[in-house]
Image (cartoon, rainbow, N blue to C red):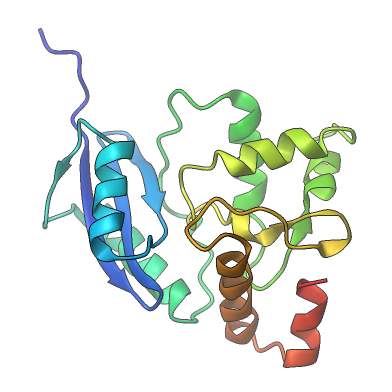
Length: 188
């Protein structure tokens, strides 16, 4: 008997470059923002999901998530809440952080401390930061919308680091009709 769950992945083009998505029977197991090239994104997906098979034909639910990410990255305000995530193996605390992060509206930010407070754990800002740093679903779980104290753009694990985080926030700010002066508040 084979207890292994079949996983698949697909790489696709966006306005920022080649992204990736992986899924199984229980939903999306991971998403990947662009690396420095399409080949690097594909390689990253193979490392992250070594048992996954690459396919050119994702199921309808995954295509919808791909289209949602593409729309978000080209500047359309999308919240991506409707997509089913498989958080098997992800610590319960991180799942709670992901759930709160997914509810941050497009074009807005929160701080790690604000999320910790919302969790009822006001001293847990650092733990929230660690959970965001281990987010396997970016940008479906939009960890780029979470900032350091005072709205400072801090570490970001995607290729390009904080510059990528700020670029995503600028795209979202424009998508929601914020002017340049309003955007400066996002970036501290």
